[in-house]
Amino acid sequence: MTDSVSSSTEGASPTQRKSRYRRTVDRQTYLDESAQMVGALSHDITAIMGEYNRQLVDLHERLREAQPRSHGAVLMDLNRCGYGCLGCPHPVWVKWMDKQKNNRQSASKWIAVRLSRPGTAARSKSIPDEARELIAEAQALIERRARFIDHLKRINKAIGAARSTRPDLGFQHTGEGE
Image (tube, rainbow, N blue to C red):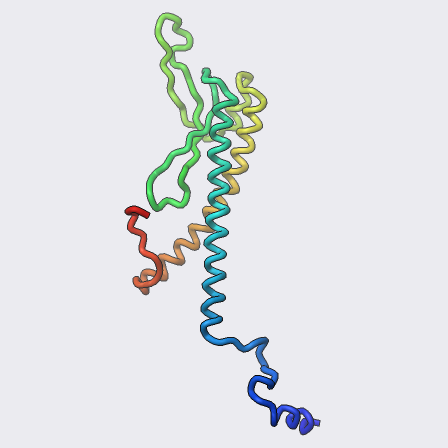
């Protein structure tokens, strides 16, 4: 029985023979497919991170609109630390306080006190319901965004490790005019 199988492929050309592998492709095809996958991955990362940041800025603006500037207003500020940070802009929760609220003779002196738990501060009766909902939505978004950034940090570390052994690999960021 083995003779009939071997005899059917003996006279066949190399392109007609069945390969033991799924498919045979040339080297350039492998390189092109790999480049496409890496390109698609980087586009997905850019799109996802851009969407998270857009939603964060949108919630920042909506929170400001939902609460008048008054004593006890809970707002989210967005801080930027500089070039090369995966987490920029950094959301920071603050509560606006009028230090001169009880002194009617002096002008208002506003300060922003940082909050670690904005949900607790948002339970105040002076906070509108719409603002409470926006604060909860923003906290959920910040949590999802932080998990995604943690994954990006691992990728960034792997890239750094590859560059430490081969400095010629990859794009070298200079921070100027990019």
